[in-house]
Image (cartoon, rainbow, N blue to C red; front, side, top):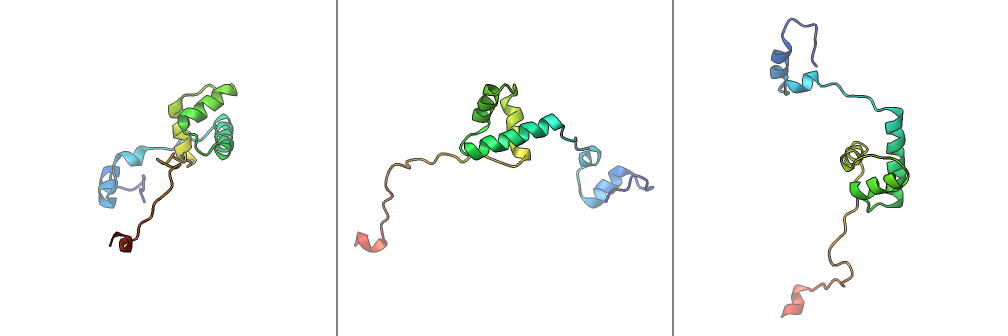
Length: 104
């Protein structure tokens, strides 16, 4: 796509392709072994507690001695990608289904 050795400047190449100029210079950082270990543990905890969000997973990791912030846990969850199963309202109440014929 982008050819850094081409005579056309990078800005002009980005404009021709219709992409934002800042994406040309962005380089992905590799994940360290420690990060992969934490991501594996987050995945294991997510399988045990699928309702746990970044706050609860952070607390579970803190209990195991892994000191990290909620935003870092949320970033790793997005990168994996996993998300918590949200609680639905009024799940203990029975669902009443009415048919339009019942209203006559």
